[in-house]
Length: 119
Length: 110
Image (cartoon, rainbow over the protein chains, first blue to last red):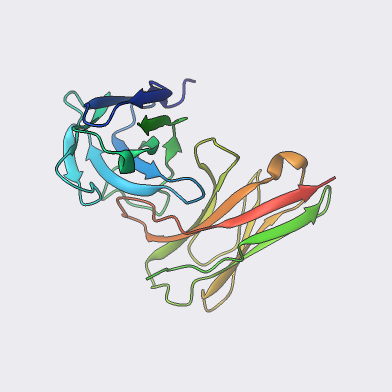
């Protein structure tokens, strides 16, 4: 079946512009995550949704970053007034399980990412 | 504080077993050990997980020591396509997110 998709795959924007990054999770997956990955490092957690509810946004670096998942499926990560330090790969992941599920498996399926470059 | 310690890089000959170690001396009783890998610029891919028993699936085997302070991921017959960064992650079963460390860059040599 279809995996997690993200769009655009590449985005170049000028400093000060707003950008919106889209994530389309695997159909039926209730949990959705956003991560940011700098070159040569592992992904860093940004925020988490359980259905449409944003249950953890502790990883968002500042209030220029926001995310929504209004219908519990597609999610959008928005960065306002972009800065050069926002340049990174932004990855989305989904999981069929939600916080509180029994069992240890918390497998996450990652999308291909959006490469954001702020000039 | 890092929960896991992995060597930064390892080489393995094609066709041989690749044994990737991970130390997690501060693991608590309800925390699982997960392994993910990331091939070049692709998204991370789940490999295997375990709590205290050894586990095996079609991709790999996971050996966890009896005191659970370390584990080893085994790729029984490494291929060139297994070249990737391998991440060992320790998280509670109800964790909201994965905390990735630096991982081990495994290079499978022809």
